[in-house]
Amino acid sequence: MTEPPAPVMVPLAEPRPPTPAEAAVVTALVAHTGNAALRAQGESVTVVSTCSCGCASVGLRTDGPPLSTVDMLALSGLGRDDWFAVRASHDGTDVVVHVLSGRLGELEVYAGDGVAVPLPEPAGLTDVEVY
Image 1 (cartoon, rainbow, N blue to C red):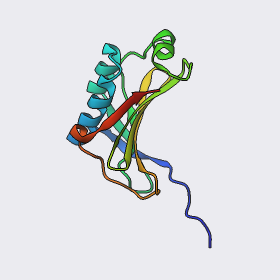
Image 2: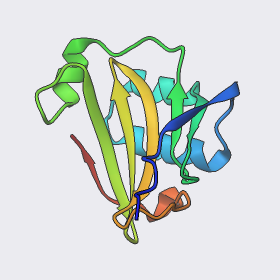
Image 3: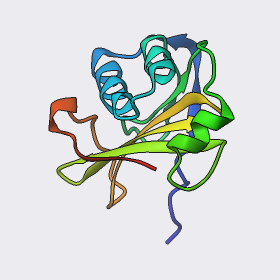
C-alpha cells in the first residue's frame, strides 16, 4: 500500500481576505506575543494559499513592516532571529501561527492523527505558547 502524498500549500489564483474565523484565530494568537507590529500585521493579513489535504491551514501574506531580527530573537524560545511560532490547542487540535523572517507566514491547523480538521473557535484555545 502506498502512502498518500504529503500535504502542500496550494497558491490561490487571487489572494483573499481571511474569513472572520481565520482573522479571529490569528488575532487571538498574535495577541499573546505582546508585539504591536505583529498585531498590525494580523490586521492587514491576506490568505494566499490553502492546504491540499482540505484542512483549515492557510498561507498568509502581509504588507506590514517586518519585525526586526532583534524582536524575532526576543520572541523566539529557540534562539532564532528568522522564525518563531505561537501555538495553542483545542480538543486535540493544534493551531499555530508561523512568523517567518519577521512576517506572518502561515496559520496551521492539525490534529495528531493526520485527519483534516476545521478551525476551532478562538475562545476555546488553551495552552498558548510562543516558541
